[in-house]
Length: 384
Image (cartoon, rainbow, N blue to C red; front, side, top):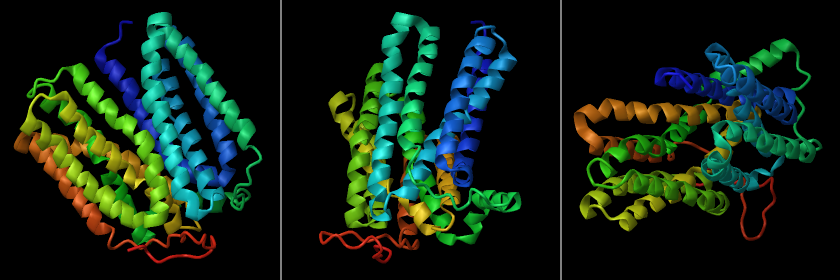
């Protein structure tokens, strides 16, 4: 359409910045106006901004308007999905929260990773890129209407809706200050940042190994990486349920941190040892998809650590997830010139072990659930 790669990159950069800002603020915003209202704002904003982007921006090839409308649209989807996450935190019994968030992330993987990736491969040949972009409005409208009509009567926490403006601003500031006032939230933030380092980092460095050095085709590499995402659909659900029985922090420590440390090393050393073998290369992809999901209980850990300011806790969780997307490639760019790919792998491995050490410090009052169906009010210790 006549735009340079730099201009295209700027559109996505602005979108990413807006999405990161919205993800960070969404928990507190949803708590102050209710999750349903925040989701409705996100839904309407997405549809309106996408339509304006398609007509006045892309349709008229007006680059400044493309930046404006696509950037504002970046605020919408995090506000929608993370407000829904806060709703889960508010209404699901805490002893079931890890399982609920496991289902949340499984559906997220299906939407973003499966439908979002494979549907365009079918619609672009039939309708073209522009037709596919217009079709997105139908999908989003369908999901938004389902959410509006099915969730409007959910009894959410409204205790902060009528606060004076000054108190609302104070609550907004907790999305930052809580990191300094609650040491366990700070440790949880570090663990969540480390959680997805290999997810974001390997997507950058591993094609250099698999394609450039081991002789895999780009198609083979993409299939290997797709297997990783496919596995997470099921492991998110599995670990969400398991965490309720074996302990959130215990699971994160032994299966999340240690499992990801071993998987990260295997992702490098097994293909290097075996060579160009597509089916063997699937093994570390399955391992990575299995153990990265063991961190699912972290979604429940944050609001449990700060039960009186759950919106702010969810905002910090979202900030941590966004920081991981930044830190992973930053580590790779710093280490690659000096220690090559293997140095990046060992850096990630070391950080996973460091996160495992942090789990011995953090204290999480997890609600107890056992085969005798203990009362939801009964609390277990830190599940060490």
